[in-house]
Length: 183
Image (cartoon, rainbow, N blue to C red; front, side, top):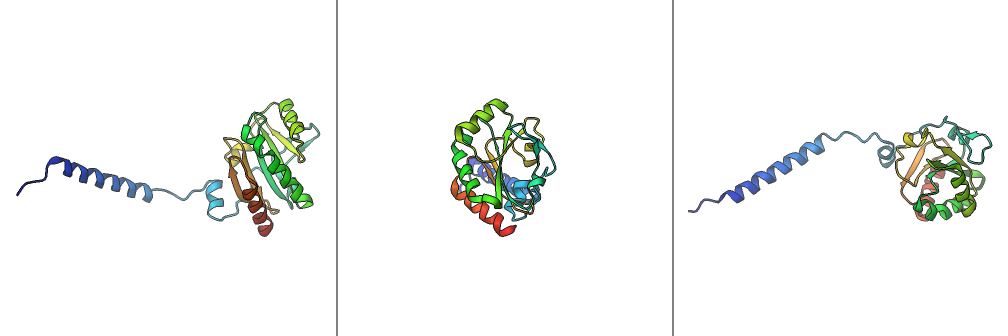
């Protein structure tokens, strides 16, 4: 009887090692406590930074999420230099029209020059308010690192949906419906 050579033995040992690493990784993964993890798990976490007042892009005062409590808020982080932000602008404009007095889209210009942000708003005929987060007071609390990113918040101030990347109408319609159902 012929003994198996070293190659099958090595393959078996490597396979066992990989399985052990996989089991270890799964066993040592804690619960995802991030905003994304909570929303994906069906929780309705409070929107972070609700009391942070950011200056309005048009220069007339400031605005915070707390001031919008009682309304659905579609919080959208964007910048004039962001191509996907340009592509999703019509979706957000449409959302503002659909929300009417029940809510608002709130744009947050992220690390952008005010003049360029204003030119963006003029070019796309933006119909909702925008605040400036030049000092990154709000964006990091939402885990925002790339643009665009959108958070749908119900009337009670809870995050019900997160869109990281360019929005489409189907996602936003569903997220707003969930905010209406929850709020």
